[in-house]
Amino acid sequence: MNARILLSSFILFAVVTAYAQPEKKSIPKNWFLLDPQTDSVQGVSAEKAYSTLLQGQPSKTILVAVIDSGIDIDHEDLKSVIWTNEKEIAGNGVDDDKNGYIDDVHGWNFIGGKDGNVNADTYELTREYMRMEKKFAALDTTRLTKKLATEFAAFKTIKIKYEKLKAKNEQQYSLYSNMYRNVRQSVDTIKARLKTDTLTPELVKNFESNDPRLLFAKGFILNMYKNSGDDADIETFISQVKEGVDYYEVIVKYGYNRDFDSRQIVGDNYADLYERGYGNNDVEGPDPTHGTHVAGIIGADRKNDIGIKGIADNVKIMPIRAVPNGDERDKDIANAIIYAVDNGAKIINMSFGKSFSPEKEAVDRAVRYAATKGVLLIHAAGNDGSNIDMDKNFPTKKFLNGKEAKNWIEVGASAWGANDEFVGSFSNYGKKMVALFAPGVDVYSTVPNNQYKNESGTSMASPSTTGVAALLWSYFPDLTMEQVKDILLKSTRKFDNLKVLKPGSKDVILFSELSSTGGVVNAFEAVKMARGTKRRSTEN
View (cartoon, rainbow, N blue to C red):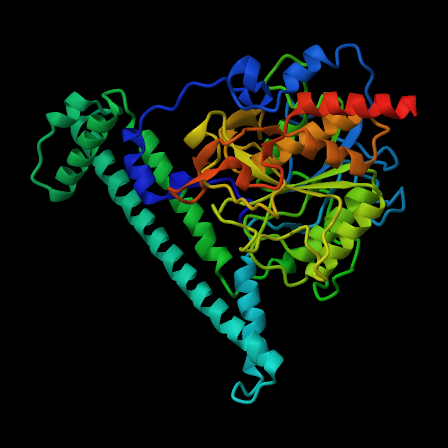
């Protein structure tokens, strides 16, 4: 659930007052590629690295797996960088490379089956509530062992949280639905009465009626014009409200729906956590918006002179679909990691997260496996404005035994400016759990059907870091995974005594206290450090 792109427009107050907000500072669409000193925005300095340190230098293609909602592999800015499994013959219905996955020409989909794909799914909170409810329904809760008593107490807490969130989102869905229906109907009626397809402030001011609903609509529209100017578009507002309806409809119908079971579509034996081979080869899925945006940040074609430029200039993207519109499942994530490793990925981007991980053992095993193969995992810290040193955000670098994965980088979201514009207000943080920050606010990237748009979230910050990692490794292919990680962390750009607004709060905090490095990922500094590492290695 945390993996979803920040949906602030779906908060009623924000929608109603959106037109009254001051216009944001104008920034370049490619700000995340730019340099703090040269360009006065807090980007990753990729362009500076290319122009001053890497011109004419050889590089090696780095394979990056993107575990996400799916990717539009035919996008004009991505099709040249999508990985192709050369050992597989497309469409012959045979597992040519004997890896357990039939016709996996461009990757794999772990949330699909022979008859279709999972789009929406339940939240892990819902699934955990159902699991524990079933368990304790068969027990005498007045006579429990100490261990079971502790678990029962946790169940009661989960039950309260589930019921509270379910009710809250049902209320929001009802509110948005009623608002959309009333405003849509009122505006359409005013247009019909005025015999016009387009409303203007003058037309609305001159509109007369004794109908209270129409008078309310008139006042509402005039207030919008007053706050935003005479060129405001009521249809834009209505479309935003409709997005809110659609957003909460999915939450109510699927996220907190105890009767919905997506595994009927997948057709696997979910109880078997180490089952392989299920799914299908549709790496796009029903809604690849999120994954397509992530992929573009990492490696959108830098040579085709259209759209945008990704961070890494010699990369292949391996699409792995495992994240639904809801919470991903541990079994699918574990299998996605293993698939990426077995098929040659050097880096895995993971822009998703949730607050429960009941089958964490399987994910831990996959993370350890990736480490033995020298594969770097880069994960989004989440969008709850929380300190994840204390609050849970899975998957996590901490194993069940308390030890930590050595191949893991957790990423928070930074913005383009300074002070209150320096950190994403939604970003999770943590001095122990979050390694660094990276651009994640208003990042312009690819979306399906050859389109582009700004999105915000740690889901964007993670691929910003992944892109820098891929850039670094492609120009310095002899580096080990440990060295790449070490360089990324040590080369972060620091900001001495910089005070920022703490995410999720109005309090002020030192930026250095939000992550273990206290810095923002920086390609220019990373390349400089890697050159020094290579030089010392040659001298020795």
